[in-house]
Length: 109
Image (cartoon, rainbow, N blue to C red; front, side, top):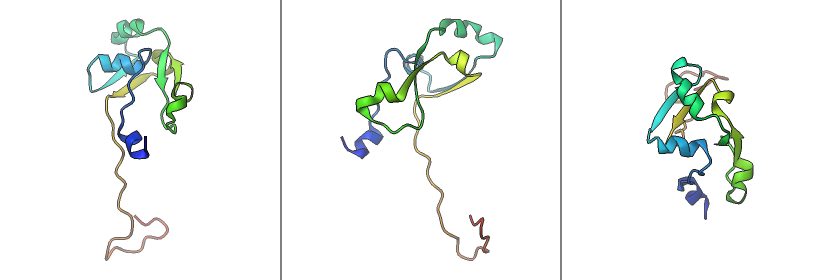
């Protein structure tokens, strides 16, 4: 598998993960505020530790479980949880100074 394949391949959610629970809910994106009294039923339904994927790790398929996931109880760890079923890379801003723009060294945009 080359780098392009890794960047476009979707790694399936593990059955014992929060990702799987949120994917099964069929909600594209959500904000879950664990502090809200209205969410006590949800907090009670998800009390056992599940796997959470780490953010910002270098992807290595051969060590994915050990190096990319850890057990967590979301409602104990976070006040709120933001879920996105799909994301994409941020597009970088153009670099360089636009023609005719004043010199703003050292803060040039």
